[in-house]
Length: 199
Image 1 (cartoon, rainbow, N blue to C red):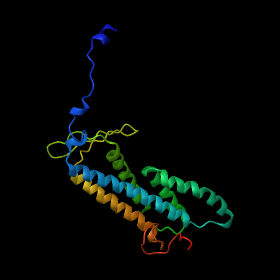
Image 2 (image 1 turned 90 degrees about the vertical axis):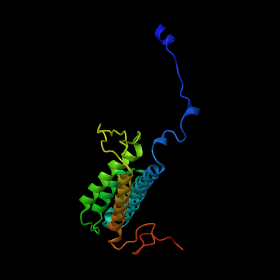
Image 3 (image 1 turned 180 degrees about the horizontal axis):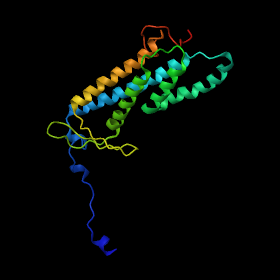
Image 4 (image 1 turned 30 degrees about the vertical axis):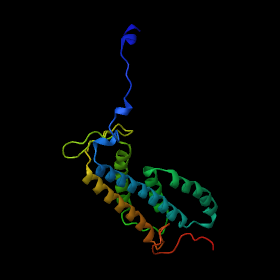
């Protein structure tokens, strides 16, 4: 108790912090690249949600199973709106496999690439970014639920390459819908509309 009374106490001098703290140690270009990459992951999540809608809306059922399938459909669509990337990938894979019209050449390969991307997304979205080294690389502090520590330094070229790869994955997911002759939901692309608003 006496030791606690003698110990000096301090507060953070918020007014003395550098402008844009704690992001001041990286360049604006780094943050732009990170932001664009994270935004592309958000786009991928939107695309997966729409693909889940497309595959589940076009799945054929025997007459005896239609009512039960319809009752499960709304919760599936709600989850497609609220789930994060890892769960969306699983739901998407199940929706593709359930649809007898689906003709995805290497679904397992696509799902594997999506899962690898999901790991990187978590690092980029939830990592803490220490001061970059002399070459502009920063090793984000990130540990996942399985106690795996991220050990790859990240720089602008890494982010730019990741952004392009995720955009490509989103296009591959869209193609899994359009190659069945359906228009990708929310687009003006070719194909038959899955759902049309009443006039």
